[in-house]
Length: 159
Length: 70
Image (tube, rainbow over all chains, first blue to last red; front, side, top):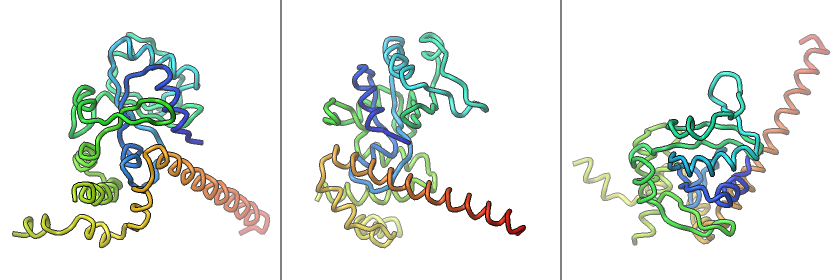
């Protein structure tokens, strides 16, 4: 069962530098579209990867897109060279990216994020304009409804 | 020309025409971000319950079909 709340608490509690992106960022801004994973953008620098791995080993993380599921066993050095991780864990699915389409790498993503209090932690979430831009850039049919909803919400906010 | 016309149209109206239930969006906008995530989690759990019920139903159907030789 996906429990993004516990995943967010785990990452924030381990002081991982991350920005919530994708469908849950859209939910934070008011979208009603239900999503079944947690997407985050992180800095893949060694210190942040070390904190990330410390969190991920506690929840039996496995690679989910490499054929047969395989435990996440790579070390800090190797993971630091990755651009993304797609994992299944005891708390559900988590996609960990180093960049966001239409926005850029972690620094640009962080620059287009807002800080919010979530579950007792200060968390960064991609801002509404950047979520709309990223979903438009990806151009997937499944993102169309989210773009329509967020564009309407954005308009209401600026009225 | 079409672009101008499209841009001048209200996004809220566009969303309504797209079929979005704007009362749900309005309700979401009255919540805090944390409340939105909690409501989302509840919705996800509901979806999961329905999915599980569907799985159980089709598993029973399949068993019944096998028994009756269908």
